[in-house]
Image 1 (tube, rainbow, N blue to C red):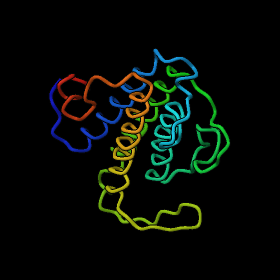
Image 2: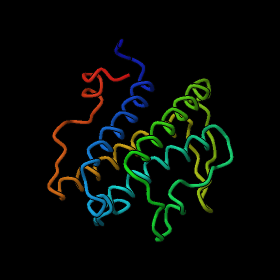
Image 3: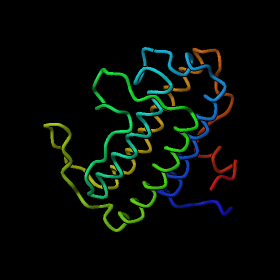
Image 4: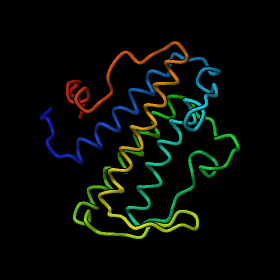
Length: 174
């Protein structure tokens, strides 16, 4: 594999790889460990991964000017109701699909990265560029992966490797 020098390719490829790598580390967990509640992020490894992947899907729709699809979480992000439960393997598959869709959206959006758009969330409206939205998705993923790493550490199963962009390129991931 040739090492990419394109910042968007690096951000997108790394985000997919890192979510997958973190999800793989959840496979040995018991169901109760995977759903154990923590006072951080969306509250459990399962819910945090679901939220992260769900955000990729929502932002793909927003950036591509598509109607927002139904939430994979089975609820709105601020709703205290439990999320739809999925297995680690199902989350890995959802992540791969979401990241592939997002990469296609970003490829179409590249000529419009400087475009300033109004984005509405609930009743609040904000203005920022398409480029900022793309970067937000990958930073959002990094933020929640750090929460997951903290949860794994609290479960006595710390992540034994870096999941940063350099590690991704060293691993030779596409």
